Image (cartoon, rainbow, N blue to C red; front, side, top):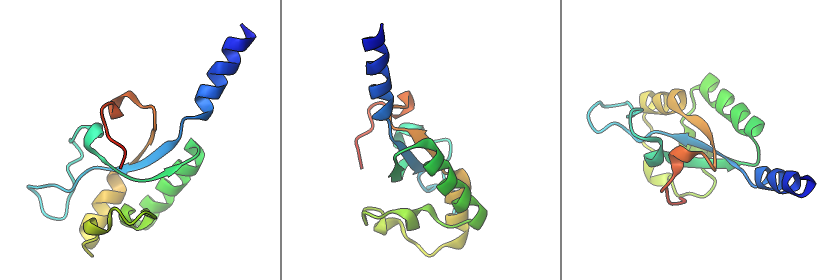
Length: 110
């Protein structure tokens, strides 16, 4: 039983957290499509634990800062549009998700 408990804790330690945002709306200017399945949302950045992700999300939403500014990889540079309304929509609809969240199943890493 002890060995099983140790394996469970080790598995939990491997779980990271993603700060994600829905894709931009194709129909409504300056907005996002928050109804898009989570598996098609965009990974902005990752965190080692839920608390770090939630703090970054809260800061982002309080400042209404576009989440793409947190992308340290440069992969989201194509999404930077200098559109304040779109940035606000992205921030307000962003979310933190565990890397093992079942809704991400089938998602390729970004």
